[in-house]
Length: 257
Ligand code: SF4
Ligand code: SF4
Image (cartoon, rainbow, N blue to C red; front, side, top):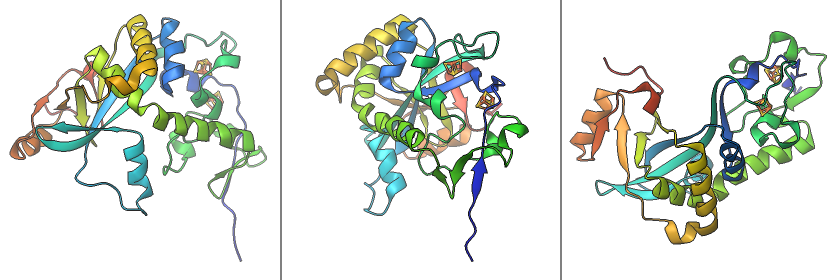
């Protein structure tokens, strides 16, 4: 006898997901968000890349497809860049009644929450900001055996993931234009860059128009907030340095004291 795993959900419009934001944006969404004067951070990680994925290594292939190749200290890495709308407290578009003042133009990530935007990562209700009552079993079905129930939402998630692939060359060009060169060692966290919104919007727009001509010119360095990672990299003769500023590093671990 087979059993179905079903997750039901109905948004209560509590507004919690519109506070303390790090919203993953596509390049085109980031041009609009930053162009409106709102902060977009550029998060970077460096993934050691000794070989390309085998045909059945789909998760590794996905990491390849959303990154670009570089050499650091003569070693092969791939740089994974994310653009995230960043705001402490309420989103600048959130109205007093907890409705979105940017509803028609809100980014895809807002349209799919609380679904998981990353492939290969199951959605976990406990990791979401939604209150318990949003997950009542009498609510509409959100996921059935891990599959999104609503066809239109499936398409938004697919478009969000495809944009992450399509944007990778332009993101390499944009980082070169902006002088962004620090990337966290993969697994330790993400290096955080916070360009002026107007400059970022302009660079992203130019990178979108000319990414082919600008790819392959960036110079990258690895940063970490962990002494153990620094020593590991130095033993491998890979150049790296410690960062201590919390504003410059979004760590997966507590920084070394
Ligand atoms: S754009 Fe709208 S839905 Fe998205 S975080 Fe802001 S207020 Fe919420
Ligand atoms: S946190 Fe969940 S329930 Fe609250 S507004 Fe956001 S999606 Fe809706």
